[in-house]
Length: 152
Image (cartoon, rainbow, N blue to C red; front, side, top):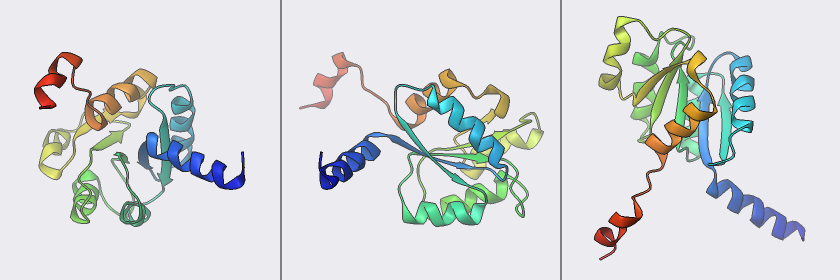
């Protein structure tokens, strides 16, 4: 395969993968997620890392992401009630999930008011959970027997 063919193949692969932006100020959390995603065979996931909301905003402006997983607390912002509106404010309309070590706080009940699609504890993230999140929030396949209704 020539260099040009390899580049085209790599681009096609990236287009077919689910693009996830993982935003957390602790790099070790990203490494943990990468290991879990490595066990995910379907769908393919391409995950990028941002250590701050500022970096995440720059990446979202520059590229398309199918899903954002956002740590609840990012310095200097207090929590998702400040960071998620910033992401929505630059035009990101895809799903945003807030992840946290502890999601039991009463203010988590307000998450829909701030543009958050779902919340999940960091200890709950595994391969099956990631597959469910992607199927639920990123891709939805209409059952085959419904397709005739939508193809007319």
